[in-house]
Image (cartoon, rainbow, N blue to C red; front, top):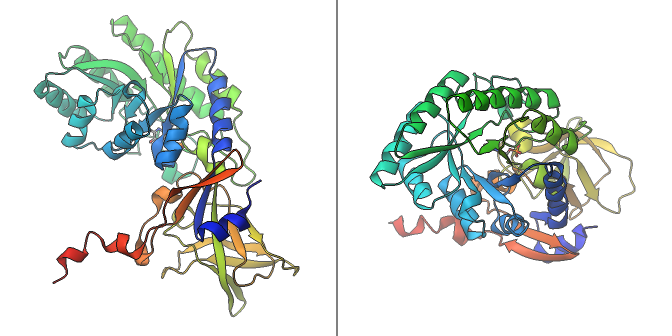
Length: 402
Ligand SMILES: *Cc1c(COP(=O)(O)O)cnc(C)c1O
């Protein structure tokens, strides 16, 4: 059990708290589900990119799926070996591509024919042979929130099957490209197995048709996307998930790569905030807390549901309230019409499931410093990121003040 009161007192609020033991348990569960084959879990760094969190996964043997060169550098700093680092993303700059090739990471995930051309050119300049994978868009509806769906042709991600095949042939004939993998990632917070299975089948068939023309891949990268419980979602059991994927690989000798983000960290994280005051506008009741949308954007951005727990000695009846932050936007809320008892100044409000796409989506909007981050491991808490100060926020501007 995490002692929110004690941690809030020690580290102040707003505060992110991560249960590293929970992250380990999730990692082990998913890794075990794939044990019938060679597999690498490449943690999707964007879900929670704190160096100590990435380091924690590095120690467990994890690789990293990165979507910017900044994330690649984080992965290296955290001790993830080059041969377990993947660089994905729909728009990589020349500098990013150059650095990824120089760092000799496992592979660069290509998302367009134009990008293949850039990578080939840059690898040629460097007199290198860049390992690549191609992200295939299987055009399957993942049945998740449209903002986090990525596997339909309407989405900007990946390339269609015909383009992918053409790209593999081109890469295979190039002196500067080495096609080693194939990738798909159809969306996030997936709770249905069928779209994953169907996508894997389509992509595995493409691997077979490439084999027929003597293009032999080594890595079958199934992306991330495994859903978690925010509310009362029914989840895909990890064993079923792995089995469905492995079933599509009959006769193929490939290492499976899986890129979980949310699954590993979401429910390991808590966002702890203090009640400033309550207020009432007409019939509507509000609880104003010291955390805001600049700390945790998901409710504002996706209307995402997060379970909220009040830590109080209040014994009043629960009533429906909107839980809002101090930022000057009507969209600055954590929950609407949520049942909580009457709260007093300095009571705590704990937002659950805040370990993925929480801190990392934060900003300094309204000149608010980002929260501190604390890790809890083996019952012990430690600071893993300092609270940002006003001086931090103006550091890059103040020299220009005339
Ligand atoms: C975001 C992302 C992931 C991780 O997604 P989750 O839903 O957090 O598991 C994995 N792979 C790629 C390419 C991504 O863009």
